[in-house]
Amino acid sequence: MPGTHTGPSTEARTAVLKRLRRAQGQLGGVIAMIEDGRSCRDVVTQLAAVSKALDRAGFKIVATSLQECMTSPDGRSADDLSAEELEKLFLALA
Image (tube, rainbow, N blue to C red; front, top):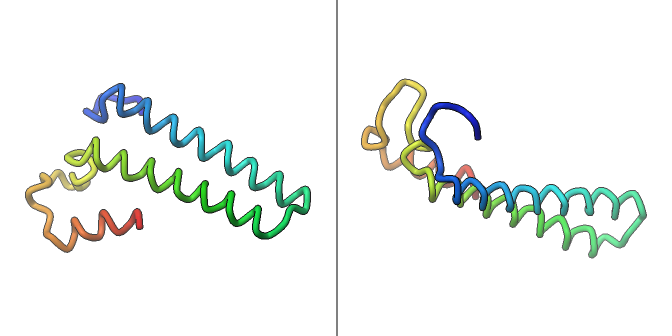
């Protein structure tokens, strides 16, 4: 997450990257399983693990960068977001 903006701490960034790399590896496993003709049950189980890893990474990003994530492109602060806008932000990860 290079750049000049204030973002997640190095520790939080490391945790998010670790989760995303895990998901990337799991997704590679799913692809290999499909190519190898593995059972539907095995593929779906592994795919669910990928989905959960991505969800956890997304929630970690929001939890550690809430202020940044809630700032809209037009420069409004988080306090300017309505309850409906906040709900949509969180539901985007659901």
